[in-house]
Image 1 (cartoon, rainbow, N blue to C red):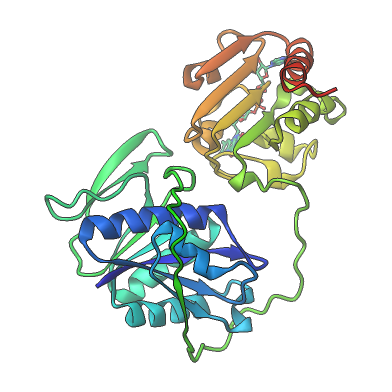
Image 2 (image 1 turned 90 degrees about the horizontal axis):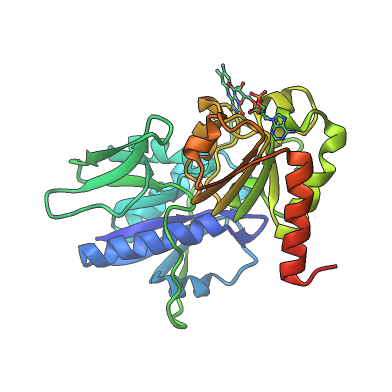
Length: 322
Ligand SMILES: Cc1cc2nc3c(=O)[nH]c(=O)nc-3n(C[C@H](O)[C@H](O)[C@H](O)COP(=O)(O)OP(=O)(O)OC[C@H]3O[C@@H](n4cnc5c(N)ncnc54)[C@H](O)[C@@H]3O)c2cc1C
C-alpha cells in the first residue's frame, strides 16, 4: 500500500502547490506506516529525484508529450495506471485548477471517496476523518471516508512545505496507452506577470474605492515594493479597469496568500469567499463601517490616496530601497 501524490507541473517546472501536496502526502503516509510515491505527467525539466527531499520514494512518470496539455480523460488514464503500479490506497492532489478538474474523475474511476478542499491531515483513530472548509470558508466540516480507496485534494497554502535532507527519489517510467484526446488545444494565450495570482505569497488588491484605472499606479507601486501579485474586486474587472484574470471572489479566482492587502474594497460576502483563507488580511478603507474590517487582521481607516503612498514609502525605507 502507498499514498500517491499528483505532482502538478507547468512548462516543465514543479508547482509550489505540488510541493505542499507532496509534504501533506508524505506526512499522511508516515501516519499510515506506508510509502509516499508520486506521479508526474508529461516532460519535466526539473530534477524529479529531488522529490526525495519531500519524503517521496518513487516518482512514476508518464512522459507522453500528449500530456503537456490538460485533457481530463487522458490525465485520469495516466494517473489510474500509476495508482495501480504504486498500489496506492490514497491519492493526494492540490485543490488548484488542475486538481479541481481531475480529482473527482479519478475518484469516480477508482470508486473512491473524495474530500475536495481538505485543510488538515486526516485523523485516523476513528476511521479516516478529514477536515475541510465549507460554505465559502465560513465553516469546517469533518468528513469520514469509508471507501477502501480515497482521494484528497488539499487547499493551496494550507499546508507548510517541508524539505528534509538530501534524499533522492527513484524515477520510474510508466508507459500508458492513452485514450485519444476529445479536446484539442489550438492556441494558448498566457497571462504574463512575475507572480501568478494563485501562487503569490502576497497580493495587493483594489476595489471601486480607487475611482478609476488611472489611479492604479499607487497600488502597483505598493505591489512592486512588496514583490506582490495584483488583484481586484469584480466590479473593477467588469468595468475593465483591470484585466478579468485579476478578479478574485466567489465568481473569480480563489486565493489564499500569506498576506492580502485590500484597498478601497467594501468586503462583500462574494468577495470574501475568494480571499478569506488568506493568512493575514489588511484592509485600507475610508469608511470605518466597511464590512471588510470584520474579516481583517489589521485595518487602516483612511483615504487610500493618502495612506497607500505613505505605506509604500515606509516599506521602501524599511527595505532600504530608493
Ligand atoms: C452572484 C454574485 C457574485 C459576485 N461575485 C463577486 C466576486 O467574485 N468578487 C467580487 O469582488 N465581487 C463579487 N460580487 C459583487 C459584490 O457583491 C460587490 O458588489 C463587490 O465586491 C463590491 O466591489 P467593491 O468593494 O470594489 O466596490 P464597492 O462596494 O463600491 O466598495 C468600495 C469601497 O471603497 C471604499 N472607498 C471609497 N473611496 C475610498 C478611498 N478614497 N479610500 C479608501 N476607501 C475608499 C468605500 O468605503 C467602499 O467600502 C458578486 C455579486 C453577486 C451578486
